Image (cartoon, rainbow, N blue to C red):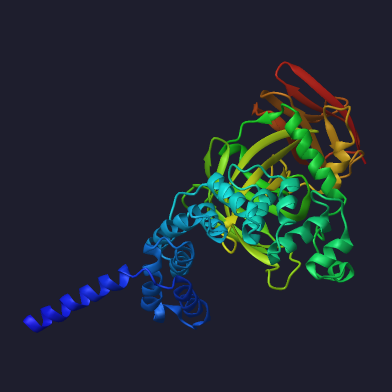
Length: 474
């Protein structure tokens, strides 16, 4: 027992003496630890030796040792290791190490080992960039490029810092900006130089940026702008959402001004046949996601739904498709040009990048069905009815042979009855018995095969008034 105590005491004395030596070569320790950390196939096997080499120099407040040991703990990836990494990188950065400033900023950006704080991330990136650290300059430019958190998106500031960096990803994003003309004058030759690409090859590639955007996109964006400028909102409720909606999801650039992709989408809201709970079904690019309608203050929350969407990639190492988690969407119902539109924004998250997705908006119009059947009204009929702008009652076709469509729009909730009679008043058919109807468009399918040929009067009684229109049966 005494011998064991002796060796233990001797070991402690020698260890203390070793730590007390001023002649410890921290540069040598740093190089050895660096080679083991980055050249070893499994650095975890050498973790004890790495930490022993660097701990000594960390105690001497060596900024390079603090940086490397911080990176070591970052690579371990668990929460406790991130906390140790943050402490070490914070010390190294405060000791003036520009590389540590970039790493510390990244921890603040992702909330690893510390609270998520984009302002502190930006401040440390800027300090590192001012010391000409390439990763810091790139990271600062990237923050402005995408405008994360409370950092305002700004292409001009993004390009300023990206141009100062030799980091490969800084060149990549500069190339993207030149390709699209984001923050700079569009210059495809410059983009090709930075991206190592050829525009003609990109243009022919199936993943060509903007391939899904056509002239119709301008009509959709104009509709969004019109909806924001007009006070024509309707209450968003589960009952108002029920039915089928068709339209498009628009994926924008990070400024939210330029449409990069457009995808057709069908959304159906209905009550579950068994539980009667309100459900939604969303179909896009041959993918279908479903879930319960969780609606609160005009915001719908998606049930952990994942979708795969195309990604505009200029590099084979960057995926051409990304997995998106659809988180929520703010909704507004707009009544424009006698049509009800469901318009809103989608908040999403990209797991591969560990960051929010680019701005996305959707514009959907309700698929019209006859009020007295579930049959969908064709685009041809809708177009013909829309041309009858001056008439309260819109009829299709006129003259008709057997099938007749009767349509009208109420400016407010009203008590309504719909009838069709011959001009002599001898034939009288009720199309819709008197009932309270909500504001908006109402359409009915009428089977007139049993009517005799001749002229008929279509009457729509709205509260205390009567609207009429003549129709001819062939």
